[in-house]
Amino acid sequence: MKEVEISRAIVEAYFNDLLENLSLDVAIVGAGPSGMVAGYYLAKNGAKVAIFEKKLSIGGGIWGGAMGFNRIIVQEEAREILDEFGISYRPFKSGLYVADAVEAATMIASKAVKAGVKFFNMIEVEDLVVKENHVAGIVINWTPVMMTGLHVDPLTVEAKFVVDSTGHGAQISGHLLKRGLIERIPGEGPMWAEKGEKLTVKHTGEVFPGLYVTGMAANALAGAPRMGPIFGGMFMSGRKAALEILKRLG
Ligand code: 48F
Image 1 (cartoon, rainbow, N blue to C red):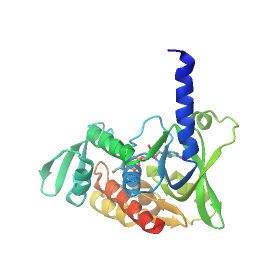
Image 2 (cartoon, rainbow, N blue to C red; image 1 turned 90 degrees about the vertical axis):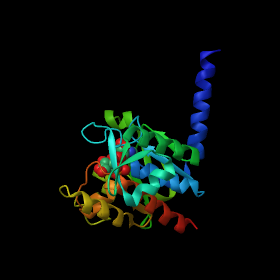
Image 3 (cartoon, helix red, strand yellow; image 1 turned 180 degrees about the vertical axis):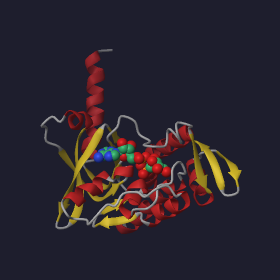
Image 4 (tube, protein in one colour; image 1 turned 135 degrees about the horizontal axis):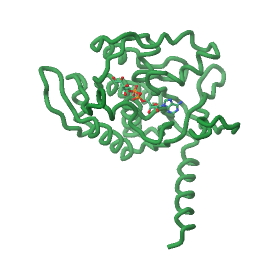
């Protein structure tokens, strides 16, 4: 076994995948719960989809449950999504279920991979490609380049649709805001779990031609209340975006 063969295998496999995914149906930015769930439903239904995550780890805000107590709450309306992913749960009281955060993150990630989603971690999406008033792709760079501020130009990935699943900061929509292409991002309001859950799902959708928002990014664009460690809204938001995009892809 030669060291250089190990290197060759990694370089070849990774760059073949990257080449294969430079042209996508859907590029999802952010591997939190809403982005991974969106990716799963898209890939399961035949779309070519990749998720770009700036951190080393995927899963976004699921792992820690609340305050590091690694349990999540899911409401009745989203229970079927727990079933879809094979995540176990137990009823807490009428209409509320408790699931293990680690099981949720790993089952969603695993089913997404098996459905055909390609994950690219440690890659930050630093901008969007916009042509004739339509989002046409993403601009990517290595996270360490972004962290160190090195002057290194990025690459681009073309996509029929881009999904901003970047969570509380709605970073991808922010790129349109700073160019005056969308009017405002009010940011999330103070905690009101029930209303926040409903509004997140309601405001999941296309915010600019070719750009969808999910999860807390949808919430930030709508100025809807935060909701804390209840995750049904994140799951339903991801599924809603996927089903809408699938219709558009035909
Ligand atoms: O924040 P995050 O988990 O987003 P979400 O799907 O879920 C929110 C919940 O976790 C929780 C909550 C539920 O009640 O409030 O917070 O809306 O995941 C967002 C992911 O996007 C990545 C980030 O590292 C995280 O893993 N991300 C953010 N900006 C970029 C990015 C970027 N520019 N490029 C790539 N990844």
